[in-house]
Length: 130
Image (cartoon, rainbow, N blue to C red; front, side):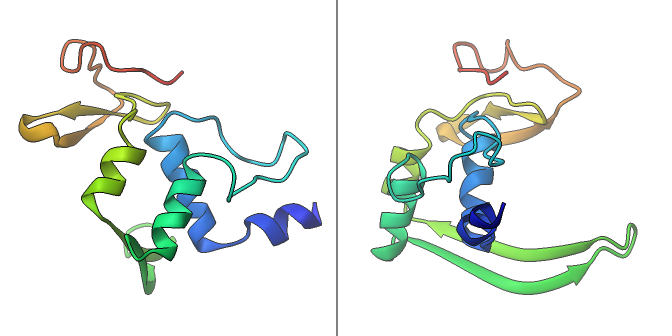
């Protein structure tokens, strides 16, 4: 739908949707609800947008690259998030989602673990996304 495109066709908003889905276990925000996503009123979008306006979240796009093995195009980017914002937004980070799992190591840091391994023993008590 045209309102989906004007509301969602934005690199920053794509990053927001991916963070919500991959790290917080939120359902895919694909517009299938028939309602536009409220990026200024729905968490975690609201907090990350406000932090970006305050300079506490800084996204950078380095350009577009081509993977030499698959010939797939890639948008090369990085997002720098101040620690207080990160801790607040991602306090409910899931230990597992539909694609992969994350295990804690010392100091609260996380390691990515391919989806072929389960982490119930490695991250007991962590919320798991379906």
